[in-house]
Every structure is written in structure tokens, then in C-alpha cells.
Image 1: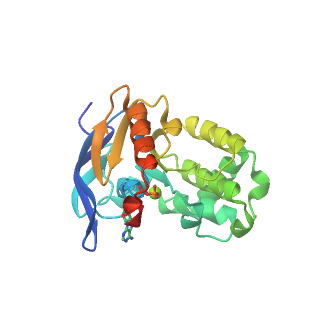
Image 2 (image 1 turned 120 degrees about the vertical axis):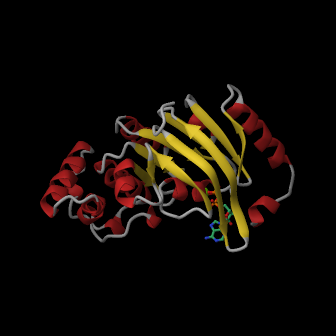
Length: 241
Ligand SMILES: Nc1ncnc2c1ncn2[C@@H]1O[C@H](COP(=O)(O)OP(=O)(O)OP(=O)(O)O)[C@@H](O)[C@H]1O
Ligand SMILES: [Mg+2]
């Protein structure tokens, strides 16, 4: 791996109040498809926000293609985009056009350039007729698609996907996956479901805020076996927070 390429996570720890959510994570990730697997409450969404530079870590740093995503926000938004687990947490504008233009304007594009890029993105997804649609009136799957259009319009080199397909039906998942695959971005996909990460070049297992295992040909099978063992017990302590 070349210095400054891919994702470098260096001594990353994060606490919220007195609670340690992530602890001492150091990883060098440079495959075009990277998976992070972990069960509910293991810290996946917290890690996703840190990787996108949306939250300052308590300790350590994240470099993506050499950009410190927390410190250099302008470079970061051109380098890394994120799709949240819940599109309701991502969408902030009343219309589809405004939502797609927002990130482009943040990148320094003029109003006209942003509108052109938004229109081109809508056309690429066959959704030109959505341009003036009200975001609130979109279904859950449509909201996911809008978020995907907004983030891919910015053409980031990396996409962080935080369980982007939760609650979507099979055809929608398949279609959105194809769009993501063809976006040209490298993908870091976070999930609790090993099926989402089958065939990924590099997979890490996040467990209680720490990396429990990395790569290895049988990692997904080992994770699934461990989940079935844990599921056989009645202890909901991990979910209690
Ligand atoms: N803002 C917050 N304040 C306090 N605790 C938080 C906050 N955000 C997350 N946590 C705690 O951090 C832990 C990890 O949460 P996180 O959302 O990162 O997990 P996750 O792996 O994404 O879970 P899920 O699979 O359910 O989405 C949880 O125990 C959660 O309660
Ligand atoms: Mg989560």
C-alpha cells in the first residue's frame, strides 16, 4: 500500500460522555471493496461517522487518500461520501433538487453548475421527473435512492455505506447495489449481515468497539457462527447499552 492511499485509521478511540464507544482501532485498508461486520451496538455507525469526518475522534485520526477527514473538511467532502443507516437522518431539504445540489454547493460549485450536475444525476438514474418532488413524500426506498443520488453526484473517491439497505425489498437492494457498483467509487460497506459482504476484498470484524479479527478467508463464516451461538442465549446485555 502506498503512503497516503486508501484508508488509514490510526489509534482511533471515541467516547461519548463517560462511555467508550470505540477503542484503539488501527487499520490500513486499500481494497476497492472493504467490509466492516459487527453486531448491533458494536460501534459501526459511530465508526462510519468518524470515517466520513462528521465527528471529531476523542483520540487518533482517519486519513483517506492522505486527507485528514476531520481536519480538512473541504478536501474531505470531495474524497469521501456517506450513506446513513437511516435516510431520514440524511435528508434535510424540502425538494429533491435542493437536496442533491446541497453537497455540490458545499464543494464550491456555482448554483448553475450544481443544478446541471443534479439534473445529469437524476437523468442517469432515470428519475428526471423527481426534480421538484417533495422529499417528505418519498417512500423509504425512494429516500434511500435520493441519498444515493445526492452522494454519487459529488463523485467521491470513497463511499462509506452504513447498512444502506436496511428495510429495502430484494429488487430495490439489487438495483441500488448495481448503481453503487457502477459509481466508480471505492466502497467501505458496514453491515451486521454477512450476506451483504460476500466477495469483499477485505473484511474486519468490529466487536464492542474493537477490531476482533481482520480478513482471513473464513471470517464471515466465523462471525455468523458466533452470532448464532450468541443468539441461542437469552442475554440482551449488549443491546442494553
Ligand atoms: N449519541 C450517543 N450518546 C450515547 N451513546 C451513544 C450515542 N451514539 C451511540 N451510542 C452508543 O454507542 C454504542 C454503539 O452505537 P452505534 O450506533 O455506533 O452501533 P451500531 O453498531 O451502529 O449499532 P446498530 O447495528 O444497532 O446500528 C451503543 O451502545 C450506543 O448506545
Ligand atoms: Mg448502526
